[in-house]
Image (cartoon, rainbow, N blue to C red; front, side, top):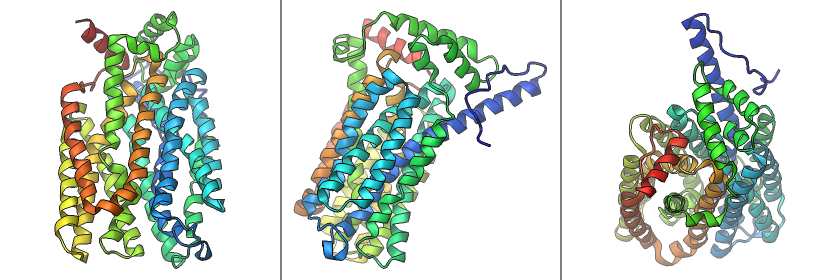
Length: 483
């Protein structure tokens, strides 16, 4: 029988410390189960963005050989069409989750994930493929804007970092699953052209699991409070908090919801308020610049990069699994680091690391002769890049986007910022195949230069948010602008 996560609102027994501890552990387990279910959206995000790296070499084959006859330009179009859809999915998802609730939007996204997976797997040609990649992108973008906010609003302040970064862990786990399944499918089918259809179709399975799981998950208490449903908000808090932790947090949520009640609907006019504008600049900067690191040139086109170093197709697909393994391990390390260090120093450390890694990749391409040694040096520096990116930048980026925006415009502002993420991602994804074809390794020096400027921006603008409630973060920005 499935566990119903929406009915048990009974208070914790208060007869003994042991009973209280048992109740607290039970409540935290329930919160973790909810987090795992919701982050299947992140798993799909990761799988659908990662799977294309292994599918593209087979889609580039002629139609007679089971491919779609893609050129470097149309490869970029197929890869970037999902990203373009994700940009608008994030923008719409932010609005919709403010209006209809986080849970209901995630249920709808699961349906889009399922339809997009089957549509791309069955696509007879380029036009249909691009259409369903855009549809899939709407789901990916909606999930990227909605899932972290949903988890952040459920999590207590002291555990928010760990629980929200669970979504990033699921994203890179999805990418690892994509890389692994790509290599296994290609290895067991003899690299036949049509194998890319099976690679894409596998994403339908977690889409079904996400939809079924979300049927048993409660709505965000902060969204419920913003709609005046205070009894429902209190009921959800009792589900996901230990003994004694409910009343103070509920009072803080209701005070903020009451203060926002008479405000007009969130929109672009809010940028006229100095403290809101400051938050949006920080959030938009994080969103756009995290993609201009060049991370998705490596995540989406790793086999393409390795093929240019001289590796064969199967060797390149197999080597790409290392990207997924390192990403998963790095995010797990990042979750541990977040419990011990601030967001800001982690972000700056990661930025320095990815810049150095990009320079070293470029050096390998520009100054070393083609050889197996060069191939594996490039792979090693790609893995170093991902180590810094996933442990120090990606974990902090998604976490800060979920926590810095005020309740009244959280969905709108997060969706707008994530729209910037995906738009930057789209431009990088579309431009990378022609760039690497024209400039070779010098492409990575362009990314390195952008990362130097990004370091300066973070140094001057990004605040520390560790250990503060979401309401306290909002109050901090208000006071800072008033000073």
